[in-house]
Length: 242
Image (tube, rainbow, N blue to C red; front, side, top):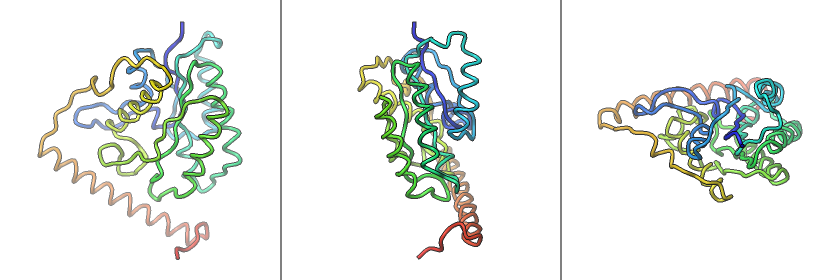
């Protein structure tokens, strides 16, 4: 007997946040499990980096799992957002740790699923190093035998919050649909479309309020990002533009 979906990662995989048209913001990995009709075991924590997966999340999984030889249907790892957004990003340090985490999951799961990161990531934007990280992820996944869902183009007002990092409730479902598409392509039995599991009703007044709130929050994020970039440049940690 296999035990469903096992997931590690950061706040994106942990889930939780504001309702969107009455739909709860829940983990994409949980929606993936529901789409497959299997149980869900999540160990992701907010703010996690790759070191946290290895040093906190996996030990918690070991402590909570009575049978460490048990097999899961799908193992999920979506990590790297907080790593690549840091000014201390180091690809050479990230790769062996990422490989260790993905290999640990792959050894315990029938299928292993990981993900690339959106290219237009964060405010301030993380920049060109995101694609470097994505290529690393794809390379390691190929070595380990993991599936990859490509989220490079993941964006949009309805799918991402104003910080351009965290998915909305609809964004989490959209990621799950991408995950299920990739899994189905590998032969997994997808039983239900997650969109069929939620109901919502939009109103013109609600759309206006939502758009105004988003515009306000987006402006705050852009202003905050400009301040961060200015401080970094004054501190000599970023080159001046041009």
